[in-house]
Length: 194
Image (cartoon, rainbow, N blue to C red):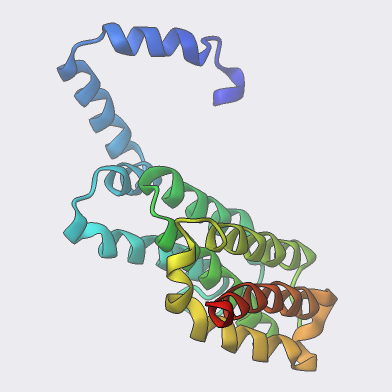
């Protein structure tokens, strides 16, 4: 584990800079074979444009499976797995639109879970807030602003769902309502000013 490592990154970096290309490729190959997460991360980092949607779909599936695995719904959703998938995708690909898509998919699945089961754990409620905050932060960046039209309909649905009393569990619906209202004000008022 990283906590038990005796070498600092700066020392490893120097070793990597001195290593030959074949040695580094062999290392990447070993990491690739070691786990599905490593494989997904490496592919996302170096994928060609035509493969990016398949990679995003694989990460989306991982996010959705936290709350809704192939066989029904999770009795104990593990938000940390979904959060890791969103963050890994962003680190590996740098794709803002894809990262926003994953963050919003996570929020949508938390809402769906609340709706279908009339409740959810507090960690997931905090997680929904965290992912909606991440989504909002990315969407309001210069690079992210152009993607608002891509997410507008999904945000409208979340907004509608957040006003429904069943979704107000632990205040999550209220928080979503606030996030989406702020985004709507930011984008729709800016459009009217032009």
